[in-house]
Structures are given as structure tokens and as C-alpha cells.
Length: 457
Image (tube, rainbow, N blue to C red; front, side, top):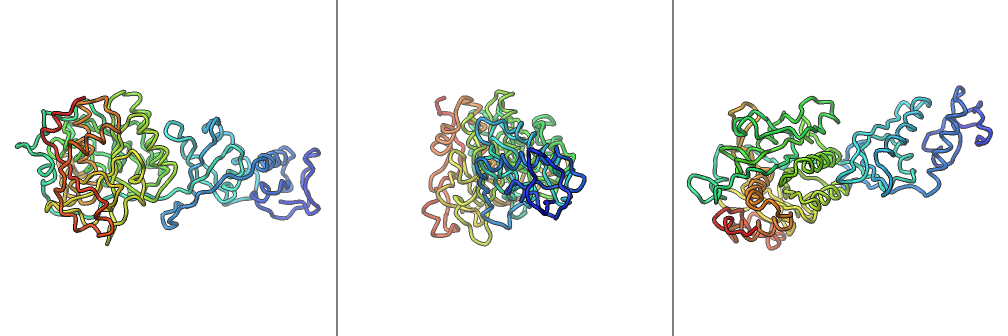
């Protein structure tokens, strides 16, 4: 409410008596005292203090989603200025916003912190109504507010059962990695829909909970990392399954960032990456992140991924899928982030997968179409899926073998040896890729042979 006859005098802190409606946002902009008839002087001072803080240095920038169809309504990542505790700012600012909510007639007012990130980025995820957003933008310690966006899984179709993927990348019979490598001693964090822990592909013990389930926290589910749609179990099976996995000795951790309706966003991904770094630092073992998902570019995710790479954790992601025609992988996230390993897809006919995005941001190609792996339906079940989501875990498993042999390799060295010693050159027919991207896309197919054994650590 706003007094008819002007602004409240802060020094007198008078209760407003004659009032008309006005928004909280207007208070932040103008410094006008608002109130209902029963609002006390203390709350009036509180609002003025918020307004004065807002006016001191101007508003932070709001970064809007490039694709408004992918925008998550009222969901944001708040980037906090350096030198300021994100946890303290979130706690203090939102306590003030909650007091406003309690005392004002604003039924649509929404302000809720969904998670604070301090290891891989500096800020917090939040749900904010327009009025709350304006006040957050006006705070001195807020550097940038970024609209949240939905992410997509890189799965496109389900096909017939076949085991061609391992056959294509491995050249021993039976299908085992060179030098008797299994990935033992290496941790893989699967940012996905979860993992069925008790599937026989994982020996009942090699699939573990990373002690954080972002989807549980944000969507009110109770999965504790357990898969409820199947994508993550299939991916984990390709990484480290006994029969279907590239590295059957690796430990796979479920970091569930996609809910039971296959919905996730960049805010869930950033918090998942925070969980990865905390766990990797605690365990002190060679670590890889598999991200079989993609979306529009996002600064918080870029910052988080770059921090993981800086800390020595290799990040593998997908080029993504696009129907009916592939697009440039450099236009999506996290494929375009410097330092990640971006994987495109191939088919059993040794052709580039027709739905796989392409271009200079693709590093290597791996089996993607009609790949069989573990199913979440039962402990012995298998299923076949297609998409670049299926390609990335082949590469992740191969890197686990390399890190078992050379556990101290940093991500840049992992990438160097992957492309130089663990790939076959010009092994694919690239004609399914649009001509405009074909020459820019490396014709490198993941291939594990005795060259892996000769790598010097």
C-alpha cells in the first residue's frame, strides 16, 4: 500500500493510514513505504532498507533463455558476487523476502531457495515470482540472474536387440579390453535419471548412491538415486556392465538430476555437478562424469563444468540429437564447453548416425543406434535404445580403462590419448551428416586395441 499524500518519512517510521495498492517491485524502485493499515513501523523500515540497498549500485543483469519454449517458469540461478558467501546471502535475503510475503497482501509472491552451490559455481538456484525477482536483481551482492531452462536426454528411439557396439570398438575375442583392463579403481558419476542398483550387470555392489538426489529435493520424489524411467540404467550399463559394459570393473555412481517424468533443468544439473565434486574430493580416486543430456547454452553450467575439469575430473557429454536434420553441436550445452569430450553417434553399418548433431565441437564418434544394455525393469532385464546418449558411455567406459592404467592423467591428457591412440581414423561413412557440417566433423571412431597398452603414463 502507498500513502495517498506521499512517501513515509523513514526517520519517523510512521504507519501508513490512507493507502492504495502498489507492488513490492515499485517499493524497490522508488523507496516508497508501503503498508496495510496494521503494518508496523519496523516492517516499514525493513522495506526502506531493502530499497536503499537496491538503489546503491543498480540492478544486476537478467540473462534470459535464448529459447523461450525451454524456459522453466519462475526458476532462476542467482550468481553471487565474489567475496560474498552465497549461503549467507541466500539465507539473509530470503529471510527478508519471507517476511515481506508474510506481512503483505501478495498471494502470488514466491521466493524459495532450491539449492546453494559453492564448489563448482558461486550462487544459488531459486524459485522467484516477478516481484521477488526484481528485488533480487536489485541487491548489491547479486552479479547476474539467469533464467533456468529444461534439458533433453539424448535418446531418440528404441530398436531391435543387438550387441554390435562392443564388437565394433573392441577387437579381442571374447570381447575384453586390451591389457586385461576393466576400469577397476575408477569412479564414474552418471548424471541422469538414476541407476537400478541391484541389476546383475553391476555385481550387486558396483552401482552406488552418490548421497545426493537433486530430483528428490526439487520435485518431492523419494528415489535416492534409483532409476524410474530407464535412461540412466542403460547408460550406466554401457559404461560398466558385466556383459554390456566397456569397463566391467568400474564403480558407477547415480547422480539423479532428471525426475520420474524425464524432466530436468540446468539448475538440477549444476547442483548435480556440485555433488560430483564433493564426492570426488572425498574419495580421491580417478573420476569421470557422463552427461548424456543437452540443452541451450547456460553460464552456470559452463562455469560448473569448467571447474570440474580444472579440478582434474574428465567430463564426457553428447553432441545431441536433432530431428529431422542434425545441427551444429557448437550451438548447445555442454557440448560446446571447452575441455569436455563431446561424442557423436554411429550405426552398425559404420555410418554416422543420421540424427546426431555434428561439427567442429564433436571430438569422437561411438556406437549410438540400437545399443543393448541394462534395463531398469528387472535385475536381469535388458533393452535396446538409440541416440547419442548411448554413444557417450562407450567413450566414458574407454576413458575408465585409460585411467585405471594411468590414474594421474589430467583431462587434457586423457583427451589427447583418446583421440590419438583410442580411435580409428576415417572408419565411417559420413554422408548422413549434412554437407555444411561434414567437413568440420572429425571422422574418428572409438577403437580399443593394443595401442592402449603402449601408452606411457
